[in-house]
Picture (cartoon, rainbow, N blue to C red):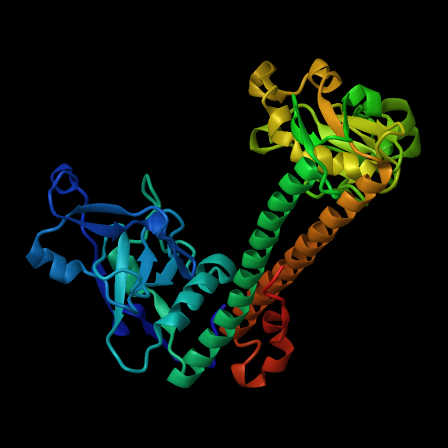
Amino acid sequence: MKNTQWDWKRIDSLFEIDAGKTMSARARNGQLKTPFLRTSNVLWDQIDLSVLDSMEIPEDELRKKTLRTGDLLVCEGGEIGRAAIWSGELDTVSFQNHLHRLRPRRTDVDSRFYVYFLQAAFTRLGIFEGAGNRTTIPNLSRNRLAELEVPHPPLDEQAAIAEVLKYVRGGGKKQEQIIESAQQLKDVAMRKLFTTGLRGEAQKDTDAGSIPISWDLQPLTSVCLMQSGGTPPKSDPSLWRGTHPWVSGKDLKVNRLVDSIDHISEEAARTYSKIAPAGSVLVLVRGMGLINGFALSLIERPMAFNQDLKALIPSGAVDGAFLMHALTYAGKRMLQNVSDAAHGTKRLGQSDLDHFMVPVPPRDEQSGISAVLDAIDQKVALHKRKKALLKEIFQTLLHTLMTGDLRISELNLSALNIADSVEMTV
């Protein structure tokens, strides 16, 4: 979908296009090595320097293959067309032959605009479908790239569009930083709270580590009842047309569940599954999800669940919120017992759950600990929602600005203050 309000030109009329250095055994084993970028380092509008390779490049060749601040890099393979600007983070950096380096030929070209245009064209607009060579490996050759027609709006319009999109994307990155900081704060808080409690007591050593001297340590079976779930037959569609929440492993991505992705009928919930009461903790005990971590959620309404989960129903010594936080903290210890089951899946056995030891402080201290950790969880959830909103705004602007459905002169920038209004502290 081309914006007919703009002029369109071949990309090689706007940019000089050069290829990077080819890796060889001799270059890899050379003595004087230069760091270089691979396609894996070039993300959309971002250069990732966390893993940087190096090879020997002769001095006369290096002069031609060194990146300058402002160079536009475009991926030939992988996610073809993926592009980012080199910002000069390192003094001397080259690039491999699977990247194209674009340098403006003219003064009326803002490379930042073309990063965003390429993202829109390759990921949303379908303008360049078939641009890659379809051999054994899809790739965007230099000749194919040179032939691509791209818009050439006035320079001030290029710059304004780039600034707005950078502004919104930057807001999303701020949210990521806040989320990461809040999660680190939670890790620190959990270690402190489950080691020393809220009252500054002396500690005692247990099989579960140090805990306050007044706390008990009890088997999981002593503080909760356990239920197994089930799945209604897929052969009866009527069982899957109800409104009763039915939880599976894919739902356990948040600490507290108010609803589920799938729903079943009341009859299906009672006949083929089990219904756990509000305040229960649902724990994943089987499946590939156990590879990435301990998955569990506190349910805030009665819910049915499948056979890959166990419902832990507090029996009085602990409340559901504290149990959820305690098991989250103890997750690594519990996952030490995860074993391989049939067909390459992972399984947390019933005996592992039965004998797992959990700390049990007084109920008022449980409530205080839960309140602290709930507050951090709420902050993380808030900024995840803001991040999702900013991502949606970015994608909408990327589409509408590049198609001409919205002109930059028509955009009310004050409506984007969400990107600056977020807190940067936790």
